[in-house]
Image 1 (cartoon, rainbow, N blue to C red):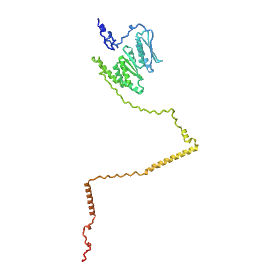
Image 2: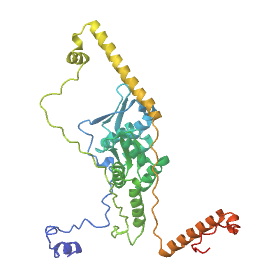
Image 3: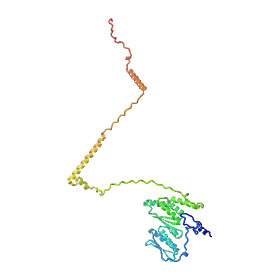
Image 4: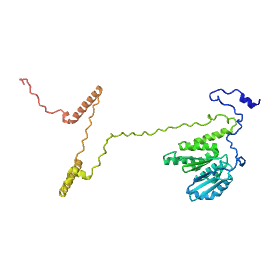
Length: 374
């Protein structure tokens, strides 16, 4: 019994998911499932029964360039048995199968080629699509944002200053990337195209390309390490936190009460005259009324000016004297102040007396004696 048969007849894994699974002896880790086998003319059974054709329109500004490079496109497609036609009147490119076409998938590759040429991809990059391991992807970004200014800013963010961000994406994904109008064209391997699409969609959804570029750089370094190649890389990849910005609160407008009748039209000059009765006055009456109104306005104006002039002669309000609050004093201080005042009074009284007051009088009047004998 061979090893393959022993593996087939061996005990099967028990479980809900692996209940009906059986080992595949033709499948092992050494097989590259992404490898595309080359299709040669020997694999073809003969010419096709029906002719297949695809038409793509191109903008007018691409007409001059396509006329220059069309011989190169024709030479590339002839090698695969595909005929091509450039119609400058209608502004279209057509590819068809011929009796020499041996690969049925070549017509689909030619269809992608003319689509890339219409989207301003250079012919050197567009002709790479005819190889088996190269594919293309045209990512539409025009309907991602409604605001035109925001769309232009995010598209420029994808390109970067002097195209540095776009160059980094091309180096990490091994793809050619072209941002043109409302689309992003990419040419490269299937794995690289998947990475490019994720970066572009995240960028248009307000996720900066730097974050995805950083993750791709870490993955490239980890893939070169033989020990970490087969392990889980989640612990090495950066985890970016989302910053939630506070949104402005929208003011809720209160609804006005519903009225089934429409609002009244604004009053015209005639309506106001009818309401005041001026409409029915004669020309003489109208002139008298206008003169009377002018006199009233002039009188009101003169009284207002007279009052303003009279304000200049009104005296300003007198300032009130501030009352000096009596400060309570001690008994000793009060005694000292009283003594001081008494001394001052005595000093003043003594200074007011003349020199005659201090001399004895010569003839003083004697008092009458009460003795009768004298």
